[in-house]
Length: 110
Length: 226
Image (cartoon, rainbow over all chains, first blue to last red; front, side):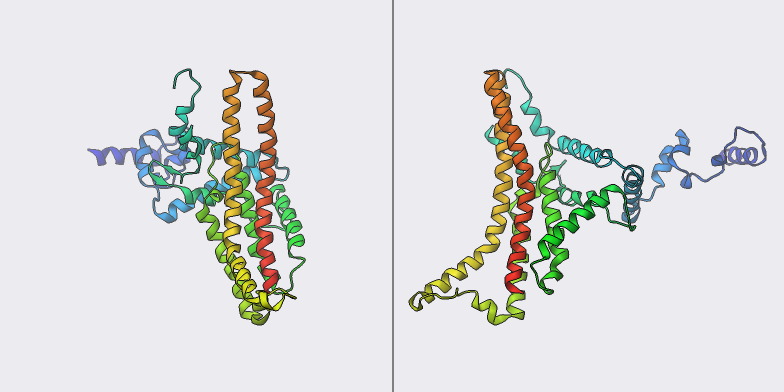
């Protein structure tokens, strides 16, 4: 029953000429970008990602260069590029010490 | 208050996992590596600063001493950036830990001493006896010079630790005092706040100066031994 449905969908997709079909409908789930993945395909997409150390390192490298090329590596970069990083660092450290900090709230009786 | 004062110096853990290594490696992402002849503004400013510092610091060395340029420059960049990042609120400063400062000071000092003993053995041994000492004082002076040699790495590490830790503690204490005084007497709170502002300016200076002093002394020991 499932394969019949899949065959019908593949047939419709390959041989229908709807203008609403996008090219990303024909790409396999594994190679799609996050914005093109449909909501129902999201769990399978997440599980298919590369979780090896090399994959995780690649993800961090891609993220770093995405931020660097957008905010720092520009012709007239300002203080915003580095101050956003420092603000995120402060926030991270605040979350790290929240347990000790919540005792220091201003109140009448501690 | 007593327990809170030193909690900013404990090894940072997050949900039980120690993340101190991540925090030590964090300043490195603020120094991107240059890829072109003329890069973006951040890299250009850093290059200008490094050139200025290296010219000033390596001018006194011979050719042999100038092979240490990379080591000394990365040392001053690391200590300076780590100290400055520690002035951000709630952050952890690795240079407050004596273990890390000893780990930096002892190998560098030992390297300079070993270089001196290997390439200029007679001159290195001659450092133990200053010129023109009276003959009866020689044994005592050799002992004193040996002690002063072995105290150099300990002094390097403890100086950096004590300065940064003391600065952080003072900021904590005076900030806490300012907060408590606002409900008691506004004028005193204002005076204390001014003291806090001046102290923070001092801490910025101390952060940079300590980095400079550490590196300068290492280079001085190097100069003695090359």
